[in-house]
Image 1 (tube, rainbow, N blue to C red):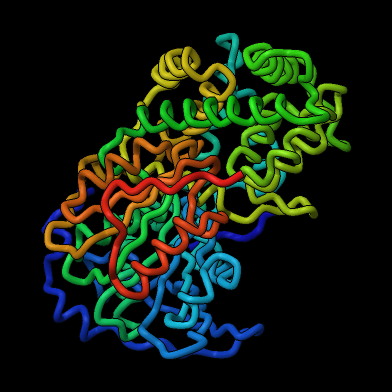
Image 2 (tube, rainbow, N blue to C red; image 1 turned 135 degrees about the vertical axis):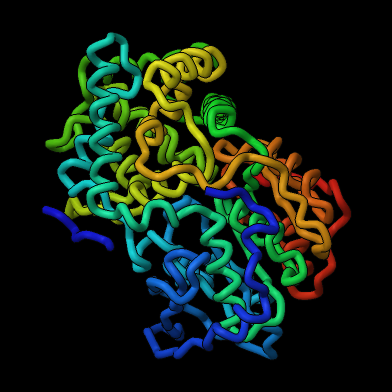
Length: 484
């Protein structure tokens, strides 16, 4: 059943045309109302097209947790995705942000345009999303590749049918301009911001557009804006491969590992063989067949967080006996599928943003070549990650960003945080972004999992907290030790 219907240039001085002063006077404050558990909610109106500020408007959902002590201002947070809800992330502020920071800042989250409660883009109904996610994503024959291409074309066509006017305006450049309107509506002279994963790209674009409006930006789990989409897919696949190796090494060093008695290479091969077997014979999933694509997604999901490694061990133990139910649960979690079979729109919104944030190859044949190349370094995850972007080959809106370094000339120090064995945003991306930003400061974490702040490292948390509250970054290149 359908969940309802939602209604190019690069980052440069061209986007600032019209003058900040005129725009700032046009932005009104927010009207807050109580929405439970100490939070307040509001709606921010922004133009669909920032080139036509008086034209059609969108309404963005905003939430805040007021500061518990003497207030310095607002800390705007974004969890990444793209497609993840900033409202839901801010709702978890008591876990995601330290008490020291919450004492001095209102923690503010918003659903970016196209996401969650903010003019959500939707493309397929839930039944068709189930089918799309289960599709063969390691096509072995021309017929399988043709089926995958047809599914990708249907996805793109569904987005065009339901959200044609919205799609060209979902890029990160547009969201960064929304973010500046939010800053103004909050009454903050300059932006204090915590962005994770894709949220680092949003923060970097903001800083490049509005360097004089930056107070302090923490970019944790950094994306390199100079990287091509093809290269980023390949490097992310290698990142997940490395994370799987780290998991296997840890598993073999403990008790009850399903690969006991094997060496690391043999265990890695067994994981790959398990996923391949699900291609010919899907695992059992409580009434839903667990295909190779779903099993692969279910295996990579726990690699985001070292604390989830025991769950991966149990999921693989069961899968080796034919029970893919835990792998399926993991896949559903990352895809935003609820227990009742409905989806959030994070999958659709994520593709919609990615497809306009940079050019992709425009043929299935080019994707096939990229998948084959990536599989050499990342045989278990490479083809899946590459093929998952195939709808972008047929996207009905043109890219609004061309990959290039963002320098944010004139901004104060910007803190970039990278985790050495981050599967989703490899450490090299953090190193690259910190080097591209004129005022970039790199803080490394010698650990596992995706992003570092709030992950249990006192070294990382103390450095980030001090920077946010006092504006004082750590020394460039400091490496915090990992924790076990």
